[in-house]
Image 1: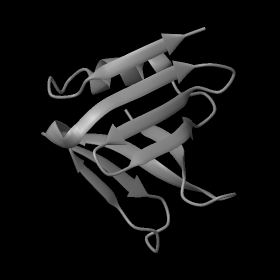
Image 2 (image 1 turned 120 degrees about the vertical axis):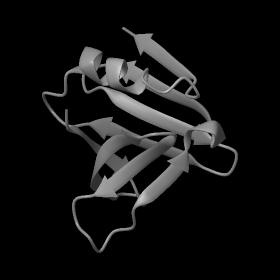
Image 3 (image 1 turned 60 degrees about the horizontal axis):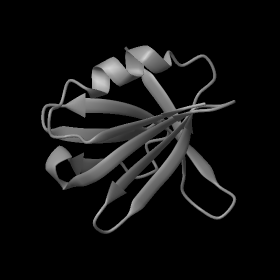
Length: 97
């Protein structure tokens, strides 16, 4: 399953990424190779929050950063949650409206 997200990368800028679980690594691979890949060891992620709103959102909290974004239109929220639950090191918080 391909999980597509648009992550905030600047004040008024978002960048398209593919969110993947690669073993114990949470990986955000950019659609544009010029943008930097984000690699986060799951044990360093304090929480991963999924919010199901008009457009579902994601927030990844680490000790040093907060990564925020939105899921692309048509993303299967339940399937995304199932994939992310595949890593027991991730603390996942779901907020449903």
